[in-house]
Every structure is written in C-alpha cells, then in structure tokens.
Image (tube, rainbow, N blue to C red; front, side, top):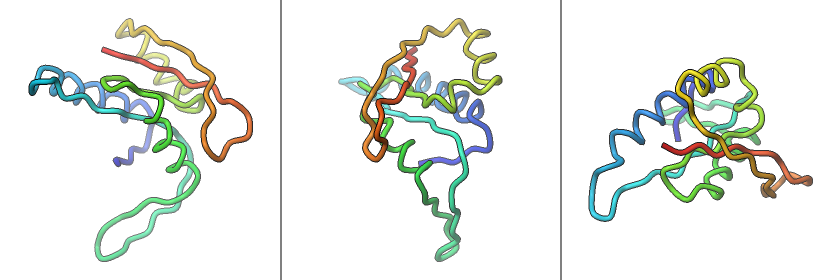
Amino acid sequence: MASFREPVSALRTIWQAQEAIANQGDPPLWMKVGIHHGPCIVVNLDERLDYFGSMVNIAARLTEFSSGGEIVLSETAFDDEYVQRWLNEHSVQTEELRVNIKGIEEPAPVWKIKK
C-alpha cells in the first residue's frame, strides 16, 4: 500500500512502476493496483504510519477487478481534473465497468487502464 496526496501522483507513480517491471521475469511480473481518493485515518504506531478507513478499504478492493498490469480507478480518482489531464496527455484508453464492491450497496463505476 502507498499513500499520495493527489490521485494523479499515484497514477504517475504506478504507471512508471508498471513500465519498469513489465518485461521482468518469466512469466512477466504484473501488479494489480486500485486507486481511490478521499480522507482516511492515519496512525503512527511503532514509528510507522498506518492508514485506516473506508477509503483505504475501497482502494484495496479495487485490485480485485484487475487482471494484472492494469490500474483500476474509482469514480472519485477518475473524475479528478489532473487525472483526466494526464490520461488525455498520454492518450490512455480507459474501460468503464460497473462492479460490486464489498461494503457498498449499489454497483459502482470504475475505470481500468492498461499499458
């Protein structure tokens, strides 16, 4: 798990990490990533930060919808103006899905992007 102030920072970092590992290993190594944006609770325990709350849980659950090598964005992250700008600048194709996320009553829109 990683924490970023802005969703576009998470997106840029993960995109670069996916590029760096794309051709590593046999079979290739892929990460499953979910990005969500919102407030969470941060606790300093044994000189280590830990994060809690529904925002953290949703981000973790988004990985269930990745086949690997994909980044799954929640609606909150996808709608961020800087994320939209970054996606447009990099001509990234997106695929919208409606998924059932544990803990959320209604199916939620998510967007998959892949290298």
